[in-house]
Figure: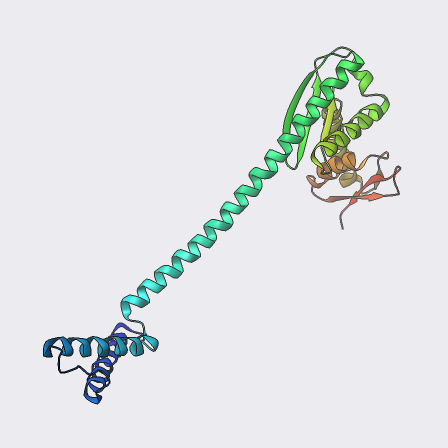
Length: 251
């Protein structure tokens, strides 16, 4: 609706309202007694007519140009508010997730500190957050490799115990990652290097290669390293615990 059309509609509504007020007054709907003052009676009639006309006009009144602009502005404000609300919700979710992971790390740190005291091991406990995982590492102590074990078997067991301790405290399953004496960090570096070297050999020779069986975490490291090399792809074959990564040239 244009501003000119809106103004014409508004003028027609006002003319109808005035005519309705006159008809109400002429028909005697509002009457004054002889004892009342003439001026008071006229004022009441005009007031009643105006209120009636105003109500009737308001029921079917078309918006003016100013009303249309105000409505459009309100809609825009509401749209902006909705966008801001969604953005705020996302930020709140991210903050909540980070706070939850920090809480997991603190619970795990307390648990591991007590465990080290019982086992009579020294070590510094560091807490961190990496993506959607809480990371807890123990380093700086003597003989910490004993808590790693052969191929990280003891470390894996301690990690699972720590996750259970966190779950008992929070009620939620934890994906916390535990590292001791940088065993996982060094292992990550070695696996990434192996994945890159195998991928480059396969790209040159065209002959597929199979790696040793690995845990899901270790296989992901290799897959990521292979994906960074053009011309090759990697797949996982076999069943746990002997599932392994296979690297082959891409077609």
